[in-house]
Length: 334
Image (cartoon, rainbow, N blue to C red):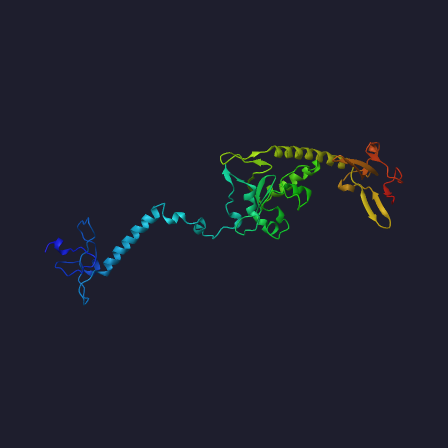
């Protein structure tokens, strides 16, 4: 019988019958050696099964294994397969990301800068343990997740989270001033802005992650970067003035150091000078005098240790009842 006569196509529902010819032994199962474009053709293998010859199970296993390998190859090579759409956390051998490592998704990402609206920032107030904790200061958004116990629910600074509360930082009013509106802030208070900004911008725990669309930055659209507002420029000018004034004040304190002082119910007030009073080390002691200061348009006095060469300064005056040459004075009780 010809080779073609030895081969039979396996049809659904049809049992194969033994045929004549030479067949490979059970240890050499293989596919038919002639091309069969319409379907796979299997060589029949003799069997001692009482119901007659069946396909060699090793051959069937080989076919199934080949199909599995072929399917796996298409699966991994096809970028549209489900593997490429799995959540990133499933590919991370370190497990789910810490909330502080979660991508901070804002309104848009322009030139690598994430922009937030006030409504979007409010979602990151620490109430959702799966989201990072964010706050804004002067329009800059910081991730403070590493300080969650302070900024999260129940924390000492929870009222700062999820918003820009720059005004509250400056006034200390954490009930009415949790806003980015600096209208009416005293000039001297602008000097505190830089110190607070350094708390976050120079911290190893916190990092800036974006900008807030609000009083200090205007968002022009998805394709444009955030633009500084006139309020930001005004605040920066006030900060520069406050720094300049602070430098002047420091120079005055070095020139007219603060007195040492004490007060008791029985004896009243007592002021005196030393070479280290006011925290200013110097080679002279000075004499205690009333020193006139002016801040934010308000006049006040403090005790200053005045060098003998500067006793005629118009800002200097004698303490009532204290001798001009005394290095210690008792305050008169009123």
